[in-house]
Length: 116
Image 1: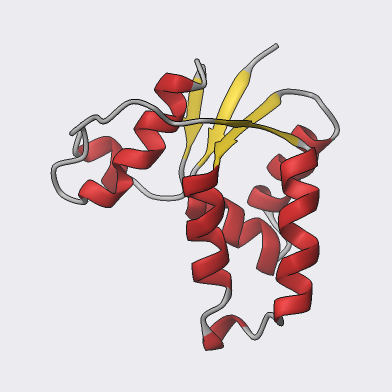
Image 2: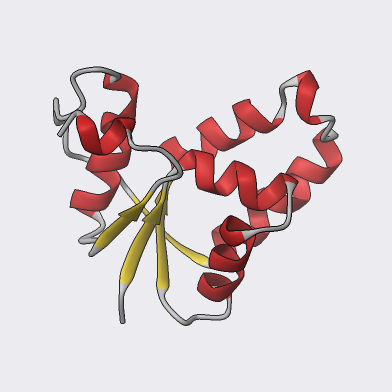
């Protein structure tokens, strides 16, 4: 089965609006492919969703995260890579993909690809 890391911006989009990101997440949750994630990605998701502009309550976040965890393989990131020179905090995406033996990283932007 295809193993896919969903970049944080895809997860945020899937959470806050209808569209391709949500459809993709729903397909992963329906086991049409394996979602590979890490605590690092989940923590970033929590941080972003907690921003006032998204108007998502703590209770909603506390519902979203466990559902995502149950629908995903949460890998332990052991690698320390320096792959994303323009935005080193995004190294966690590459590390998750590497340690989780992912086939694909899905991102909503080109900056991650441009820096590799």
